[in-house]
Image (cartoon, rainbow, N blue to C red):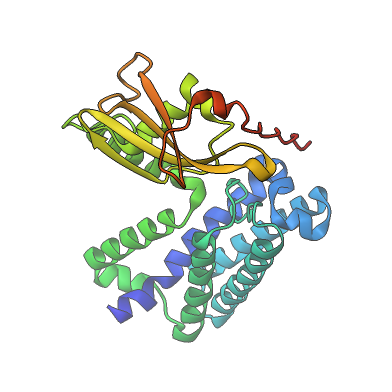
Length: 299
């Protein structure tokens, strides 16, 4: 297995670098994606970032060609290792100063930098070092062990695809859609009719009862239980103002079988219980609850 790995490492690296290099160098999307990358922030220019991305793509293609044609020469492997180390440093910088930016690794992904980008850069670094040290050729391995070589390359390709966020639309999204078709949406209930609590919370927070109680509520969901066909959702709140402010438990009750797929708006009951005395609070007393100021939108 070790000989198979070291022998076919040039092919795997050549495929990865050839693909990412071609996309960076020839794709029209490079200029469109450059402003979204951490590289544009580093260079303070989208135009310079585009130029660097295309130059990097050209370098990747040259290294890929060297790995394919002269894998026994240590130069292509060493160059790939240096490139992988550079990628890791760049990703660390981008993650630190612009975590919302994309890395531009393939010039076609606009997702933020995640562990997958680091893992792919590590593959380039380790693979390049392995090729430089082994200084072997890949064609004898393919000719002598074709079945093993095919299985190894297929597995390596699957790993690289899983580490490439821009390819998610080809395999991960269809897989998620299939899972939803088979098992159903998590907020649409289950085959047994049991509605998830998250679905009940969503229905509640879109109801008129929630809008009426919103000035009092001061927490997220604290507790929930079911009683005689009702789902009880408990929140904490405050009524009164300033020195007269008192804590209160806000309790909502709605049909335990109501979900997004039931159609009609659910009936919601609301109760307020003084947190100190445990006595019910009259609705008239709640009119003294201070309304929450709406924060201005940035922009």
